[in-house]
Image (cartoon, helix red, strand yellow):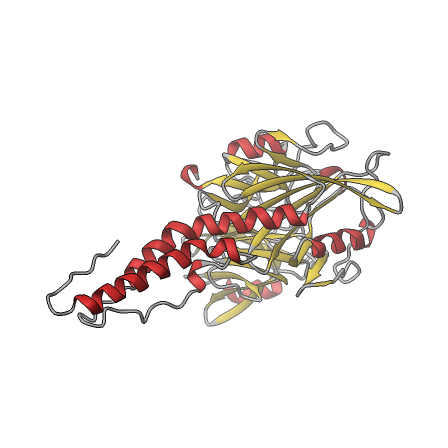
Length: 424
């Protein structure tokens, strides 16, 4: 802590200041005992306090006190809120700022078994919330159990992620990891962006383009099954060794170092560090003799500084209101009571992961509306549904904690993990 020098002739003024500082320090240290919820230290406005004789700011002294007690106050807040939110649940501390909650709720007299993980990111600052592919080499054509994915990423908690093609494991929807887009959006479905300082949710579209010879071509998607023969699709090495079959009237260009290295009506080998463009020949003709081709890939809306994106669908909570747009996102087939997986975040950036067991007598599952109302009851301002049914699985502290139909959970394409930053 800073010290104040006392000068002859000013003892009375300085003694008075010392008393005031002592009282102020006492108030700061005792405030969590008198207020609920506790007042965060960084909410205090103390910058103008100074030594009236030397005009030396006392702010540094207070800041040091704040630094010492803020994590304690934040932890006390987190603990009390979780206990209040889940009064009849079993609550376990997984790590600093990470809690695992087990509870049973009843809907129409029938039980539903629920596992929840709440993460206070400012406390759990040794960990990162991020999507993870099942393959350690980031190959999209891969499936593994959540336990394997969690161990490969040094994670203390994980849930299954976005939808995927069962035959191959390719994720169906937007997936960005460490600012790299692996797969693009499907049916304009909702996605959640994970930033260093918060979260955002929106229905995403691809916003990419290819530029050469003064011409621009819109990119419709990346590493996704073709929806229309007229689409322009980019395939990267994560897709596999070769691009998929060309549609009727289509053509393909293999690009490396911004140059065309091969062209064909048939599938092409995807070059390391490059990509293949698959599109109608009519739209590729202006680019066939280009000496340099430049590609940019982004999303709409554009989330600047977003680090990770995971998609799902439908919305569950939007702007603090229940909002289930199942039909708009072409998800009509996932209605009824089923096992469910969901993620959301609160106004104070508490991140919440939920796994709901279903299709059994001891846990019948939830409808999407029931899940949406449950996520809202947890304080989520925004929440989305992820892949569910047989894919629903949650891993905490070295083991699967829910009861999926297949013991340990089926092999899945991707997961959302809470992994240690030290070993990323």
